[in-house]
Length: 153
Image 1 (tube, rainbow, N blue to C red):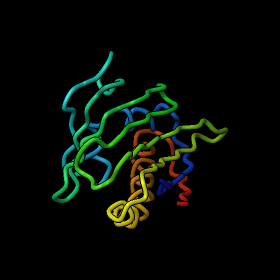
Image 2: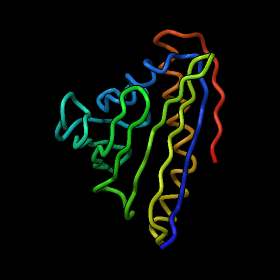
Image 3: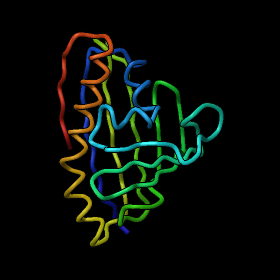
């Protein structure tokens, strides 16, 4: 089966650690992103948000449940949607790459191409750039001067 893909990227003068502090703590998501609530169903291995953590995020009337699959601190977070979206095999990855000026953030996801998956694709194509912009703005508010460039593919 073919897959659908969405991704957004941005560059910032904020330090990678500032980006990671926000990305790795789902409880902060409602402070900088479009979610009305965000919390852990379970914390996962090691610290909060570790591998196996169950995260619950509410956007509008929808509550999405995610499971953290991989964590490479300050570099990469991988999660899967396990409930709340009409998609199959949804896997998302947030990558933070240090640059000379700060960091590059890339948030991407893939899932099976189904009828419902195509409807979700339409929504996420506009949501992902918004999320990356909000993440970068929040990270910059905690330190570095503004300097945002966003693209979505």
